[in-house]
Image 1 (cartoon, rainbow, N blue to C red):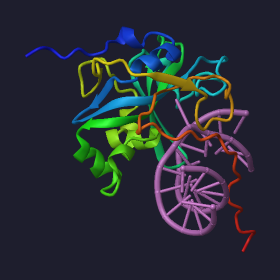
Image 2 (cartoon, rainbow, N blue to C red; image 1 turned 135 degrees about the vertical axis):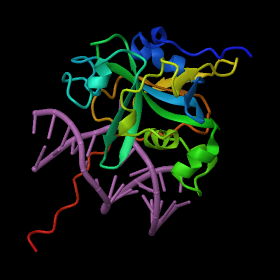
Image 3 (tube, protein in one colour; image 1 turned 45 degrees about the vertical axis):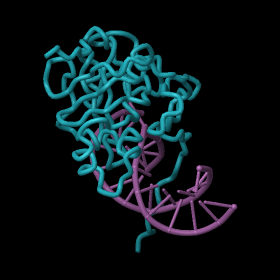
Image 4 (cartoon, rainbow, N blue to C red; image 1 turned 120 degrees about the vertical axis):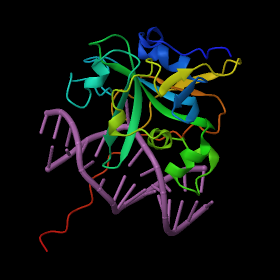
Length: 208
DNA sequence: CTCTGGATGATCT
DNA sequence: GATCATCCAGAGA
């Protein structure tokens, strides 16, 4: 049987804003679950993109983003959610593409087991934290290589090139003028756009 | 569909 | 101490 073409490290060794639209329509595979990517966001370089986790330089959390391209960067946020990126550019640079949404095309049973029995098909991976859950990404997957022939890989999608649109990134408080969110036009699995809303934490009961 | 607010803890200043 | 690349339930239209 023919070998399945898999995206190599060179595919990711480019600016994230170029890799991001190229990922749309491609298939991200993690173990038994395969997902057709429908929405992604590019995050840029230290000192250049204020919305990027690498804006202020390397920390323990974002260290994987400064490593070689083609690896998975998983981070924990809002006290309960994981989100996943694919590292771009070259080692030491600090850039990545956030995986925001997709359509589950294989392993729907596993994805639903992780997401819950009542979740509709199109909502299984509609949103970055939902996508991470559906694919089973957690802390232990931070740094996982998508180019080493292991359980994580990116493969070609169908022959038809998707219609790609772009606009401002979702849920961020800075860098809102950079149109580095990319999605497939009219795809039902694309997450609804939400502007960032600053919110105060619920007031703690005053001493009693 | 839209809007609102709560959950919950790691991370960084 | 404030923020956070979010999700969910509930109310209203």
